[in-house]
Image 1 (cartoon, rainbow, N blue to C red):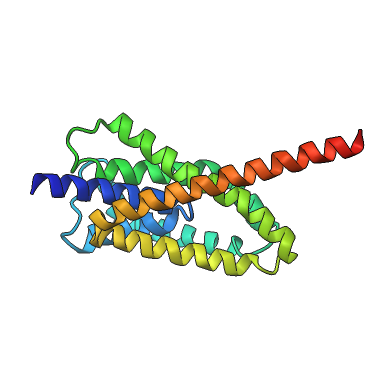
Image 2 (cartoon, helix red, strand yellow):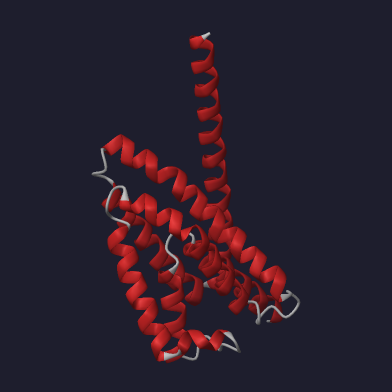
Length: 200
């Protein structure tokens, strides 16, 4: 039973932190609401701050702004730059808040893992979004943004309700996402080399 609880804690931490890389405020708000109004999540200090009324309102407002700005071409690129610090921080908070279930994980390690998970997803998103803008003349940005928001909502809910399942799902997503980023970088490098050869 302890192994299942620990794996569940890790799964929730992984899933919530990863979804924060897509949208910082969706998993934070869902996590905070569940902690405030149910017994599924018991937060200790200082993470219980997330359940305060003023914090819930702030997260809701920030989420609304994020969802609107992220669907506008050019503005979404600026937003991604701003979110470079916010999304990894949200991932760190979410991972560390869940780490109290995993007693052997130090807070520093938990924060670092959360930063890496959310930061990695955010980096992949930042790479992909300009390509979508260029290939669709900006018309596809709103659709991609909606898909990202839906994925973040589903991942956040499943991370809380089915954390063990989300552990394996998150590992798969990170694996395939990492492969996609590596392929993209290789293609970009090969195009740069080909361009240099054609010039010379």
